[in-house]
Length: 197
Image 1 (cartoon, rainbow, N blue to C red):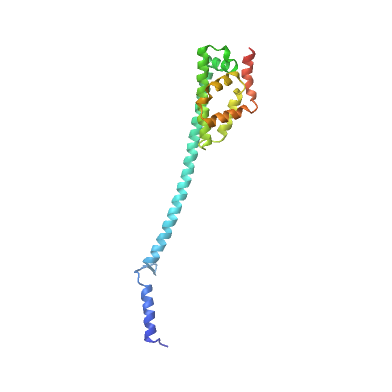
Image 2 (tube, one colour):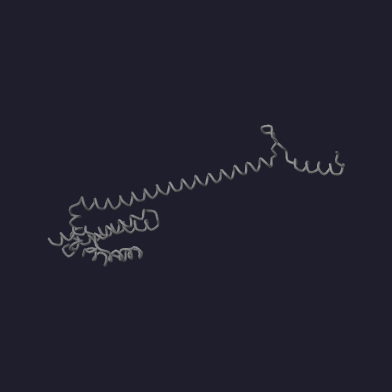
């Protein structure tokens, strides 16, 4: 059965519209440029998503590396301070006597004691803020708390804190004041032994 001429013309027009894009022959199949465009768009989208996934992974690795470096630097700073005090008998004596009995120090020694306190508490403040910002592990704050608990009952620390607390940021001062309400560390007996002498 043959179609009337008018209907066959419509079919020819539709077929003509469907094939208005040039075609490529791939594996014995015809593909129009439009099909190739859609395929390449899908491939491009997948490539962008993969790039973002790789970027996020690299960013996380860099963040971990940065935190690790900062933690090492923070630890090195405090460790250097302890080594400097521990390896210098005069500084050790000033630190221990300054904590336990600041009235036993000369004016010059008291000033040195305040310098030692200022040095370590500036490091604590820096580490405290880095911890709060997420740049250091939150356990750093716990470590600072434990160190401060070692000296919290000592007269020298109270003298230093009364005179120098205004040099610190308000948030750090509040943090130290909060530590005052906690139970002192057992390690503070080191200073009590000096007080008895």
